[in-house]
Amino acid sequence: MIQNGRILDGLYQIEREIGQGGTGIIYLARHLRLNKYVVVKKIKDHFNGKINERIEVDILKNLHHRSLPQVYDFLVISSSVYTVMDYIPGKDLQYYLDRRYTFSEDRLRGWLLELADVLQYLHTQVHPILHSDIKPGNIMITETGHVCLIDFNISLDGENSRDIHGISPWYAAPEQYRKAQARRNHLADSVVLDGRMDIYSLGATFFHLMTGIRPEPVRDLSLTMESMELPYTPGFRQVIARMIRLDPSARYSSAEKLKKALEDISKYDPVYRRSGYLQIAAAFGWALCMIAGLLCLYYGSWRNTVDGWSQEYQKIYVASQSDEYLTVIADGTEVLNSTRFRSYLNKKPAQKAELLNFIGEACYQQGQYGDAVRYYKEAWELNSRKSGYFENYLISLIRDGQYETAQQEADSSYGIRMLTVDKRNLIQLEIAWESGETGSNVTELAQLAGQLAQSGSGEMAANAYIILGDTLIDQEEYASAVSILEKAVELVSDRNVRRLLAEAAAKASEDSSKSNVRYTYLQKAADQYRILASGDTASYEDRLNYALTIRAMGSYEESNWTLKELVSAYPDQYQPSMWLCYNYLDILNKNGNASSVSTDLSYYYQSCRHLYEEWGGEDDNMIILENTMRELGYN
Image (cartoon, rainbow, N blue to C red; front, side):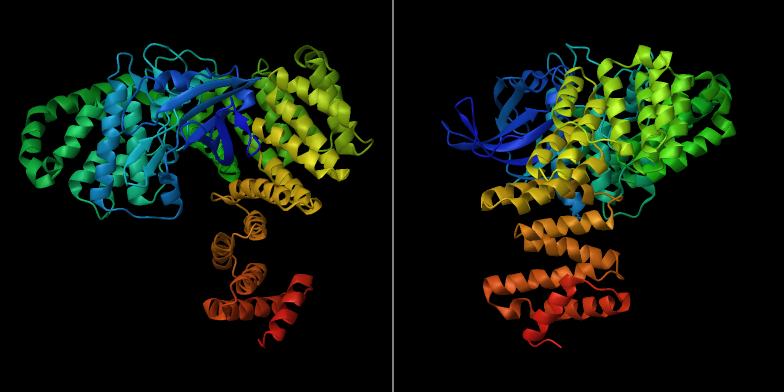
C-alpha cells in the first residue's frame, strides 16, 4: 500500500488507490511536471520474479493507437516495481454489467468495431501481440463514449514464447483453459494460442453485455446466442455467435475479417444468405457427412471421455477461481463418482489429484475441515511430488483439531524431506496457536513470515501472517494487525483473511483520534468488504458490514443502495431497514430538508419496527432509533 501524497521518483504524486488487478494495485497519481493525472500500477511484491515486470511496458511503449493507453515510465524503487501510463477517465464495462445496464445495437456495434480495430493493430505487429486477458474489467468506456483496452500483464507476443501466466474465469477461450490445465499438471501440450483467442474473449464479453448471462467456457455459447430472443438483429447476433465458437477454426480467422463482418452486417441476415447456404449445403453436405462419420469412428468413446473431462475440469476450475465453493464440491464429487470418468482418472493420477485438491480447498473454505483432510490426503497420495498437497493436508489436520496426527506427519520421513525448517516451525506454531496452549511470539512470527515470503512459499507465509495478525488483534494492536494482514491478502485470496483484515481496519479507525487516519482505515475496511460483498456467494453479514462501513465514511447514497438490496433479498431482517433510517436521519441533520427523506424514513421505520417486534429480541441501536423517531413525532 502506497501512502496518499507520496511522490515517486520525484515526479508522480500518489492521490489514492483506485483498484486492484490480478498482478497489481492501481493508483491515481498526478504527473507533477505535466500537471495531469496518470495511473501508477504497482506490481504486487509476490509477483516480482515470477512474471517479467517489464512486459506491459515493453509491449506498450512503442504502440500508438487511440484505443490503447500510452505508457510514460517504468520505475524500480527499492524492491518495488511500478509502471506509469495514461489515466483513462470513465468506467469499465464491468461497472455497467454490475448495474445491469442495457445498450443499443448501434452502441455495441460501434464499440466492437473499435475493439476489432485495436486487435487488428496488435495482431499485425511485426511480432504479433496477443492481449490474452480481454474481459469487461479490461475495457474502459471513456467519457466521450469510446473504448480503451487496458491491462497487458499476461499478454503474449510472437517474439517471446512465454507460457500463459494465468486466465480470467468466464471469458478465456477454451484453448487457454487446456493450456493452463497442461501447465498446471506439468504436461506437454500442443495447444497454439493465436489471435482467435482474443476474438473469443471479446465475443464472450459482448455475449454477457447482450444477454446478461455470464459466459461459461464449457457451454457452446453460440447456440445459446442464436436461440435467445434478444433485441438485436439476426446479423449482429450471428457475428457474436461466430466469435464464441468453441472450435477456434470456426471463429473469424483474424480481427480484420471480424471488422469486415461488422461493416457488412446486413449480409448476415438470414434472407440475404439463404440462397448461398442452400448451394453450399448441396455441394458439401455429402462430404461433411462422410467426414463426420469418419471422425466419430476415429475418435470413438475415448475422445468423448477426454473432451467431457476437459469440459468438466474447466467448469470446476472456473467455479474455484470465482469462490463458488458449493459448486466445486457438488460438481467435483459428481465427476469423481461418475463411471464415465473412472477409467480415465485412474490412468491420469495427476489430474485426479488436481480435482481432489480443488474439492479439498472448497471444503476448507467452507469450514468442513474433516472433509478437506480426506481430499487433500488422497491428492497428496496420488501425486506426492507436489509438496503443496501435503502442506494443505497438514494445515487442514490442524484446523480439524488433529494436532497429534499433524505433528506425526510433519515429523515423518516424507515431512522431513519435503518441508523446509521454516515450514516445520510454522506447523508447530500453527498447532500451538490453534490448540491455545501458548501465546505466539510476535517477533518470531514476523521473522518467520518474512523468511517464508522471501523463499516463495506464498500460502505458508500467508498462514504465518494470519497467525501474527490474529495475535496482534488479541493484543489490541489493530494498526499493526492491518499492516500484517494486508501482506497476507496479497499472498492468498481468502475470504476469511479479507474479513479479518476488514475487522481489524474498522477497529483501527475507532482507535484513532485523527479524522484523516480514521478515514484511511475505514477505506481499507470498505475495500475488503466491497470484495466480500460482490458476487453470488456474498453473505448477508458481509454485505451489511460493507453498507455500515461506507455509511461511517459518509457515503450515504451507496450505503442506501446496498441496504435496499438487502431489504429485497432478506425481507425478514430488520437491520437493513433500521440502518436506512439512520442514514436518512443523518442526511436530514446534514441538509435540514425533511421533505427530501421524510417519505422513505417513515416507510423504512414502520418496516423495521414491525420486523423488530416479530423478532422479540433486544437491540440498543433499535431502542435509540425508536426514541429518536418519537422525538421527531413519528408514532
